[in-house]
Figure 1 (cartoon, rainbow, N blue to C red):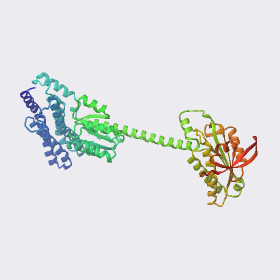
Figure 2 (cartoon, rainbow, N blue to C red):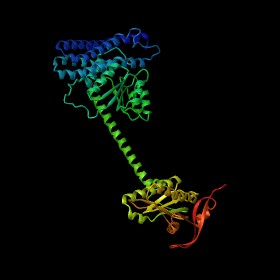
Figure 3 (cartoon, one colour):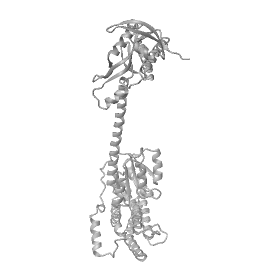
Figure 4 (cartoon, rainbow, N blue to C red):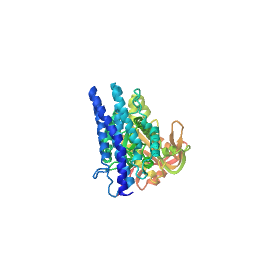
Length: 528
């Protein structure tokens, strides 16, 4: 299109826009005069905002052919880009006119100022007609001289458009069930103010941001439930902000409704693909805006509840796993959680320890139950700490007896060494505990090494247990040991004779096993 054709088209656009814009400004003047005459100061702020927006719209229209105005086609700017910018800039004040006008309509009914209603409805009708015909008016690529047929088609389209049906407000409508903190991001002050006013009326807590960068700064410090994000902004457009939000682990779940004067399908698709929850064109339909905000907040609440439930389930599972790990080895807990039903393994080289408190039954008969349990818990808790530090698996306690195993469920070559270390430290720890109490306990310990079978038994109360001849021998060695001594088998002595010292005991008779050569483990071998 030549420069001459473009100027001709701009002239036609200005003429098409001037009539409805002048009508809007005229009705706004009438409303201001009538509200002043009736003494209705509460209506004046919104009427003034309508007037300011009408004057801004009129200034844009009158400047279409003037050099230096914001709507003059920029150097190198294509016609489609210019048309898009023109639509955006014209819709902003129209959005404010429609929004404040709809709020005024509610206020007029509340104030009983029915004489203002007719002029306000005419103003809104003109704004709606202009909105419907706006794209047709500024469509440069399809411009031809207006014909009767074209005008008839425009009339038919406008009559069918629901925006022309100005409805009286439903005063019985309640606030939405869901309210929240909503961040409004728009570089246009009128648009921001209008949205903030609407949101406050609906019971929300609105926060405003003048740019995309300011919005991101606010979100670093504040939590919000919903973001209303303008698409066209100068420093960082809405799509860029949206991509930043969805790329943030902390912010990605905040629902975003995109708002823009651009209504082409491409913009909607790009925003939805980038993660927007919804898309609203300017100017807003108040009922639609309320419904979409309510729907987004409700989904956000359900999502938050779901995250809360998941966190609660995770915490409960961690508690359950921690409880299981206090009963079962960690590796076995993992196998149970993995779905294994029957857990049974054979280990060829395991060292078993039994420890029994000497004379415990007599002590239990002469002290209070609370004191007895407290002392037993203190001793066995200390033994648990020792076993955990050495990587030895506590199997169970039976009354005043303590059983542990090294080399399962994870195989380790130093199973005999760590068990010898545990046995020596148990006697040392017990002696230290006796210094702090009037009740003195002594222990006898038996240790043996060999093959075992280990597995989980029980359905409601799990236990990880160990079976085999090695277990029986270790138990018998403990039973015939002496107070304060660690009795071990020949297998243990042979395995540890290079690093530990032993005192031969000779041959002892083990119940069910017959005669067996044993020794007492006395300490670590000192090397020079």
